Length: 108
Image (cartoon, rainbow, N blue to C red; front, side, top):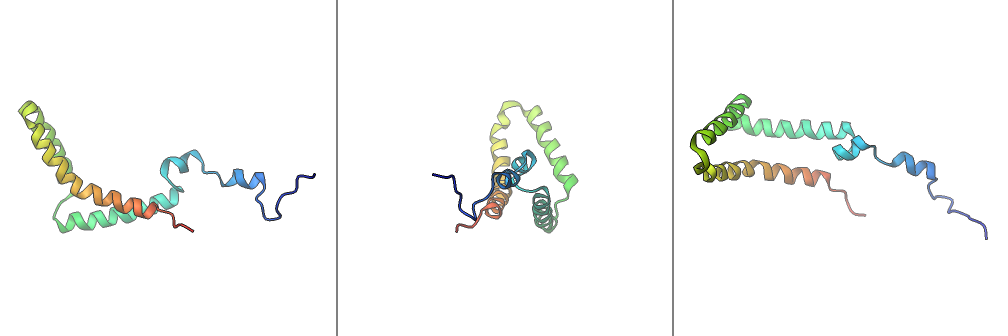
């Protein structure tokens, strides 16, 4: 019995070429596609933040202010951290959901 393959079966060399590199596995796709997604998402988030009249430096100052208040208030501020987590989740969870939807592959 001879070892005959189907005429359209991929060759072993072709299979090795299609394996994702370590960088592609880390990024979740090719660098160009990931960069395009990040630019698009940054554009959407940027529009949203400008619409809310929030500037990037204000966000950084706010984060610094949170840590200063936590340091000054001690452990009583744990409840306040929960409020910040909930407020952040209102933005982060939809962004995560959109990213997951973009990364879904169609079944077929």
